[in-house]
Image (cartoon, rainbow, N blue to C red; front, side, top):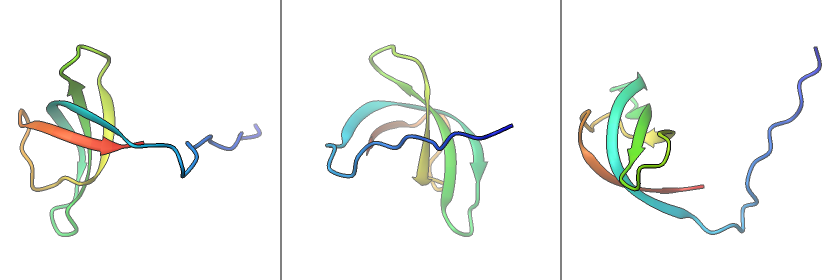
Length: 68
């Protein structure tokens, strides 16, 4: 089965900022600080995945995240 390359946003595309709640950790490495989380936007849109230096945060914490 041939895999199609993933499409990524262009680097010159502006970043989005979303406010919401960290629902749960999918992966967390406390040594490096890297984590993958499920994030529930305050605007009621579908939850999304966020990645980055998030391991020090807590489930249920309100956040403002920025990215593409």
